[in-house]
Image (cartoon, rainbow, N blue to C red; front, side, top):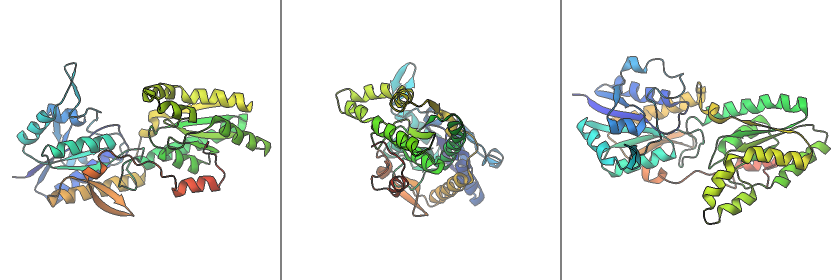
Length: 356
């Protein structure tokens, strides 16, 4: 009797999910003795016991597809909306796991998925995870799949905005995703040749940004490109965050931060400013070759761990090597940009303003 393995995708959709699913499935099918089922819509599908068998035909031709063939949701096993109430459905999930005679479960997701998977591992389930997020904020892996594709899309947007900024002598502000960390804004900003990059890790001063733009004007440069992560805060917002109830206040302020930044820069520099918010376009579409390679290699390594009956780990990349990291180490911490990171040094060396 073949061993049954479950797999699901949770959290925001990310390029590379389908190639990771495909790699796990094809490796297990190629080795033989395994059957793979995919739970639909993340942990909710696991709770409701909705799944499909991922045979060779189902896995065929999906490596180039964005999104996830299994669907996804942000439902958490211990905080799941059911019948108008928020309930802990962990026991139901554990019961479904055992009633389906699963040998193990593979969860593909970001930081939240790593935490939820760790909870299920503590509930006695055999769990393995893969790191996916365009934010690149998962600890103990050099890179997460999805990041390269999102950075390419954001960089292309910066490239395109250069032409309209230069034609109309404007300030163009591009907002990228990145609520807690600025890896995406930093990478796209450097690659796209932005003049200002604003990150959640470094609170900015609007006057410093304006001064950098005015300095460019004096040097004969007639436009400026500002790349700002959605979670970047001004120094005044950072002070509000320290107050009681400050987190909720800052969340509200961030909803209108970018248009207000544009208005303030217009006033401080005397130049027109326009805003482009990329939003979900960064998460869509065909994954880059690098993300396909990364997710495929992580998926095949995951299948190898399954065949060795090794559980409780996340697949990761460290120093160009595939490794496994205990879930207890990745569940919770966030990979912020270190203050001494070489890319920050690079930014300063080439004269890009960080707003501080």
